[in-house]
Length: 423
Image 1 (cartoon, rainbow, N blue to C red):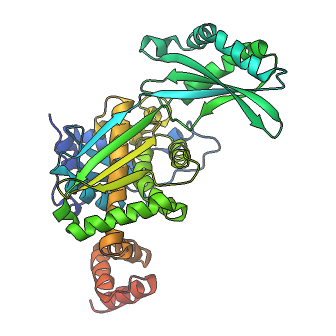
Image 2: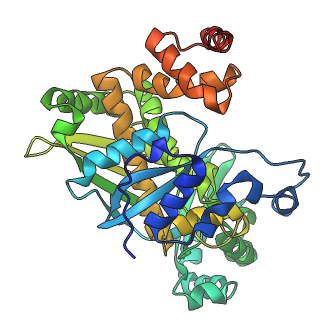
Image 3: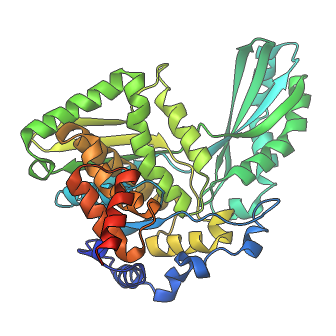
């Protein structure tokens, strides 16, 4: 069954009804999404097997972003985030791209890097040459550590070596390139690096110290592109101002930090929902933002030949579908089933598309109306709940404080008291 990500009126339904409609549109059985109900999700007993010293679990809202078409296929995208407006903004931006084919992506593959640091080598350049001469031997030794990965078409594929000047002398750093296929890859590459370290030490004549993956996954880049409709954005002037805002973020690291945070609002939400490593993805993204020696924007925006807005995004994205919490966490399993992705590369394509959509939505809000208007309107429901409103009262309180233009908790409390006294 083909997924239809265009779901109108979803926000007007109750959560249980939303789950039913989302499951139906995604072509999965309704029970698949039951772990998204806290009563059926991660238990303390299950959590106790995931991390140490467990005392409980924490709930994060999981919303579903709609309207996404990525590489010709529709997706309903689970997003775990506590920040209001993120899910709605991503959905709205995806709608603006939908009529122009949605999002298109490309990738450099699923290769991760393991680093082996050697110190105290007498002849660092000679050591580098000797390690490269032993390339085939080292690859064979690395692949012997994970025959399953090799049988799936992955495994160690190359070796590179750098002589790195440091404050404690020249270090010889060996990079092992490993195609990790559908895994995030940390365990696989770390195991290989541990196995290679004694031999690299012997060849180099130095002492192997650190042997661990790098989260600067620049051999695992994902690129996303979309055309956003000029009229839906608000016209030619808004398009032009978004391009100016993009240029500001490209040139200025102070602006770039917040610009990229908007991208990560979308990316981190999907990464978290699917049980992937948010810190690894975030560190990889920010290391890529400074690859030219200055922190800059990860995305770019231009005016296309037809006057529509063209957005592009490139970043490393190490996500997987096997191992870790993705397989052990019931909510993560439900999120992956809802997405219906079959490979890590497909998951990365969706994640990057959400990041681009989220970024565009923020730029449009900044350029067209100011970020606070839309964000605070959605935040009003959180304020109403914080003021003590019940589920039945939240909508009324939120509507009133928005209308009054005073979206603050003390005003919400006063409105709530007035509402209750008038019953």
